[in-house]
Amino acid sequence: MSLAAQVLHLARRSVIRTLRQPANWITPLIFPLALMAVNTGGLDAATNLPGFPSDSFLAFFLAFPFIQGALFATVNAGVDLARDIQTGFLNRLSLTPMQGAALLVGHLGGVIAMGFLQALWYLAVGLAIGVRLESGVLGALVLFVLAVLIVVAFGSFGALAALRTGSTEAVHSLFPVFFVFLFISSMNLPRNLIETDWFRIAASVNPVSYLIEAIRSLVIVGWDGQALALGFGITIALAILGLTLSSLALRGVMART
Amino acid sequence: MNRTLGVAGAVGWRLLHNNFTTPSLLLPGLAFPLFFFVAFAGGLSRVNDVPGFQFPVGYTAFQFVFVLLQSAAFAGVFTGFGIVRDFETGFARRLLLAAPDRRGILLGYAMGALGRWAVTATVLTVVALVAGMEVGGNGVDIFALYALAVFVNACGLLWSAGIAMRLRTLQAAPLMQLPIFLSLFFAPVFVPVDLLADWLRVIAHLNPVTLLLEAGRSLIAGTPTHVGYAFAAAAGLIGLFSVLAVRGKKKEEAAGG
Image (cartoon, rainbow over all chains, first blue to last red; front, side):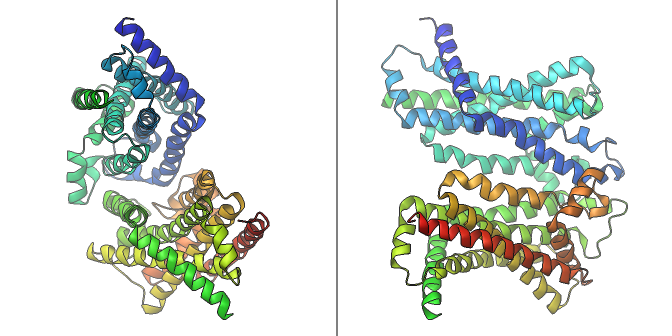
């Protein structure tokens, strides 16, 4: 069986598995939008701050569900992989000619499918409630590409955690860590409007800020080359790092089995 | 009476012992309120400058009250998780057999929830004061603020205990925490109620948590407003959830733990 066929089989399994666990796809579709509603309703008045870059907090905040949804997809996917290790599926797989790369890429197939569906859903909801993309239709396509890349980057770290620990609980415990990165970012206010010095510095060194700002730029600015370059650059760097470390961890796991 | 208190003391001590000797139970309860406080008070302090935002003792105190009440509610909810764990491990069944007065079991859980929150509240208060939080209220006001939080803690515990004793499975965890989470966030979390978006303002006005938050904030500012109503609302919720908890307890006894 070719590598592509192996990837296809495992990706199909990953997608079906995700679909068969409603909690794995309902939560990422609903919860980020609920938080967006609460924050938008609560912080709408922040648009009156001098220098706030948009007159719609909803448009400003639309980037948030893309990132939080990616976190959910990542943890869920990591948990699935950890369960494969716990239940011995990976042991059985190692007795077949299946290649490690196929396992990793195939596993991420479910994450990518989920990321694509989420992006479509968030954008559809955003447009339905009145957000207009300043970057137009092409911007929407770029947004999709970036959203899926972010899911791949985060997903690779979820896979890494699963492969290193082999424990669903350990992967679950990653969620609060990711959550810290999300909240200590420019999620609620632009960095130049964050008054507290240490928070602004933390948000500036936090890569998640740049992912949010890249998505946000497509919604409220139009085409901001710097924001997009930083967003794509950091996402691709994270994906490469995560995939490399996951591949190394996978070798160890397959060798042990 | 002595037998009730004896059972309550033993159950409460066991809960506290478990909580303070198990890092995986202790740390989330301490870390999450601190994290929310840091993220909201640090990241959103500029909201203080929004036209129409008038809170005399600053945004840190404004957010402190929310996080204090939130931590109180969730200390109760997390204790509910402990009750479920007791069912799943079979401890609850042994407890029912051993307790000479079963009313003490619920009282013991309430004592455990209160002890657990007391530590979180102490740490949170110290962090807030170190961060420069201003306090406008006098000793009586601050005592009333913490008393209000104790009421909220009891509400959280009684709600989650009622669900836990009825359903006796950790799968009920979302039902225990989601209504509390939503009622806390569909309230004026980031800005006063008058500055909320129209749709959220309507919900917030119907939400009793708004009354608790506004009374708490008025107490820390030293301008007590609607405090009596807030205590009455909290007492009403305690009465309502007590019925749920006591009936849950009876169902538990009927099911044999």
